[in-house]
Image 1 (cartoon, rainbow, N blue to C red):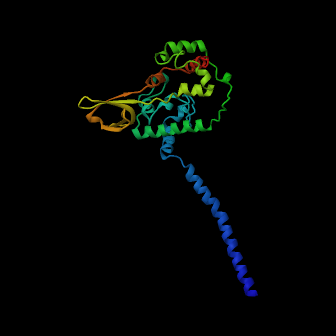
Image 2 (image 1 turned 135 degrees about the vertical axis):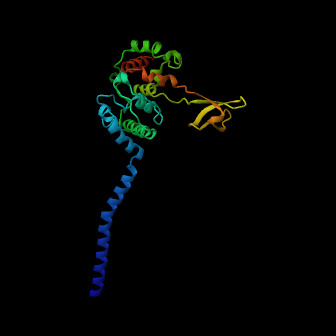
Image 3 (image 1 turned 30 degrees about the vertical axis):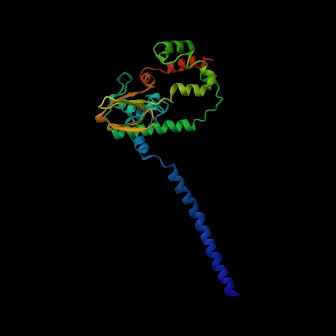
Length: 265
């Protein structure tokens, strides 16, 4: 009987030790798994450090602005692709706005771009703007000034019409959605036109482009790929006019244009 009690005691002790170890290790395992799940992109980490050193004194250590503008909600960042526009501004600077030119490698530019895109994505996912956000809070511009910009300096009338594609546009989208479509237009793909050595033209939506290869889907839906040194390439970007506005548009222009679009009901 004593032996049975002793055995049971030892078994209970082992269970208690096992339970205690499990209780200690499980949170650690969960923490490790959680840490791995949220571990950031290394490029973003490098970009954050590079940004703080080279850009943070003007744009804020978190890119939300200081002496320089907020880059988290910057149209230029929104239209940037892997540093193509961000890199140009970094290397050339903006003397008229007090930004000096800086010498950076392609890798450093791409890391900074990765960081800024990550910050922008974080801001969008955490904004929590309600779908019924009061439009009155967004209508800070002047609709007539927006109409003048649309028909004049903005060049919007060259592609859009208030009686055509934009007819009653304010009834089709909420104010939040309309402003998002205005600032970040999408849905139109770049068209690649490739001229072969024989003179044949191959045209279709762009799939991939780099310094060596151009790829597209032709009119039959076939994937076609060509080495760039053997063909002539033309890229037709339907959103080029929007990108060209980035260096011209002001905050007042944006608010006025939105007020005008919101009046199209």
